[in-house]
Length: 231
Ligand code: MN
Image (tube, rainbow, N blue to C red):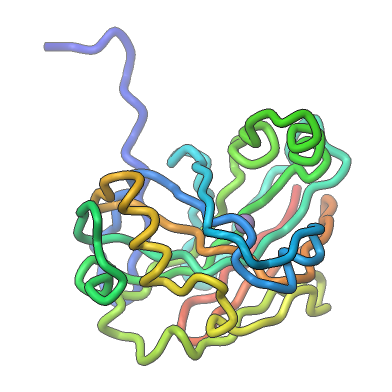
């Protein structure tokens, strides 16, 4: 058997403390999952979780201690950062109960749900899909995955994004409207989760635009930093 062209390579993410890598399957994202961010986007902050996807090949993988490159995307005048805790699924399943979620989680990473806010806003206004605003090339930067077994309590971690030395977003994982167990329960009721799935769990308040030359440093306590320069 042969292919008519070379298949795309498997996208994979480094794991702290090992040479083994985490092969990515799907990238799910949770919308409006911190109350103050929901409010800044004009909503009440009290609605059921909802989801969108990004292609796995939109991941921008940044190794520990390195500065990744984030290309400024086409078609936008308002390229926004959204710092997020990413949940890496190691064991799939459907209809997973919140209390059983720990058995399905491989680890956690720091991610950015980069957004062409102007295009997303236009699609919202017209009641059209968000893909052009959310699921574009290079829209999902991610740092190394830390195995869950190496972490104490991720629910007690701080989350922060610094742009050119200035804190833009700062919050706490405990402020998630829908916690990690509840996210997995809702998500796995709608899709059968697979090993390699990544879940961007939502961003706190403070989303704003970046421009070429800006250096972004994303932090979640206990995880490797995610550092990128916009080019
Ligand atoms: Mn987001």
